[in-house]
Amino acid sequence: MKKWILALALLSFWPVMGWGAKRPSGEYRVMTCNIRITGLEADAPYPERVWENRRDLCVKTIKNLHPDFFCLQEVIYDSYSWFMDKFGKEYYSFGFVGPEMDPWTEGYHFIGKNVIFFKKSRFEWVSSGSYWLSETPTIAGSMSWGTTRARHCNWVRIRDKKTGKEFRLVNTHLDHKSDPARREQIRMIVEECDQYSDGMPQVLCGDFNAGVGSAPIRYIRSSGNWKEMYEDIHGPGEAGRTAHGFLGDAKGPGRRIDFIFYKGPVKTLDARIVKDHEGNIFPSDHFFLVADFRIL
Image 1 (cartoon, rainbow, N blue to C red):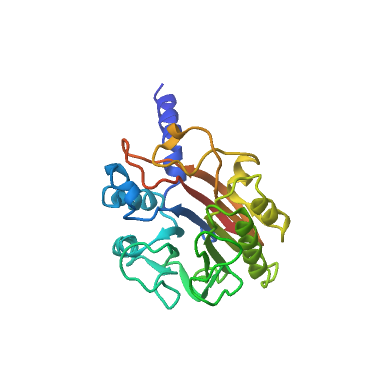
Image 2 (cartoon, rainbow, N blue to C red):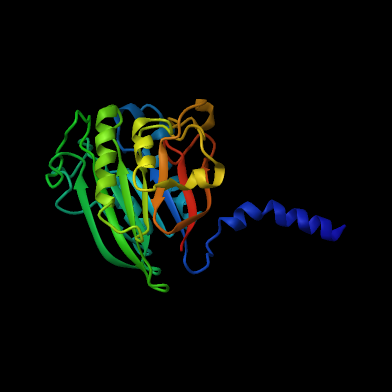
C-alpha cells in the first residue's frame, strides 16, 4: 500500500519535476512571451490588465519555468526596466537599447521591442543584430507593404560555454492587421536566416499574428526545412487560442498565433502552452509558449 501511495505521489509531481531547473548538458529551455504593451488607454478601466497589477505574475510565470533564454514581444520602457531589475543579474538582454530604439523616452509610440534574454552562466555572446521588416531594413521605424506598425527582428548568436556549440535565437512580431505585410515580413526573415549553413541551429520565436493555416505560416514551413516545436510534441493542427484578451480559456476557441520554429540539428524534447494565472489576473493577454530541445 505504501509503495502504491508513493507511486501516485511521484506521478502527481511529474509535471513540476519535468519542468524544473535542472537540464543535462546540451539541452535547453526556450520561452516566447508577448507581454503586451503597457499603459494602453484601453486597459485602464480594467485593473487586472494594468501592468502594475500583473507584472509580478508575469515575471513569476517565467521564473518558475527556469528558461535558459526567453524572447519577449511588445516591450517598452517601463516593462524593460522591470525585467532588467528582475532578470538583469542572471541574464544578458539584447534588442531594446541602442540606435534602433524609437526617439521617445516615455509612452507608447507604436514601436514595441522584441527583446531576447539568455543566461550569463551558460552562454557566451558571439554576435547579435537587428533589422527592420521593410524595404529599407537599416532605417529605424521604416515601414513597407502596408504594414500597420513598424516591425523588426532581433537575433543573437551565442555559444554554450560547456559544449562549445553555437546557435542563433531570432525574435520577431509580425504585423497585426495586414496579411500582405506579414507575408513579406516572414519572407524577409526566412531569407536572412538562409545566409547560414544548414549545420547552424536556429530557433525563431515570436507572435506571428497568423494561424497555423495562414499564408505566412505555410510559407515558413515550405522554406528551408523549418519545423515547429509545439507541433513536434503534440502533432499538427490547431492547438487553440494563445491571444486570449485577459480571459484565458473563457475567451473560447481561436487560433494559436505564437510559435517556436527551428531549423538545423535540433531535436524537440517537450513543449506546452503556459496558461498560468492567479484568479482573474493573467501575466499577459497572450498565453506564453515553452519548449525544451537539444542541439544534436
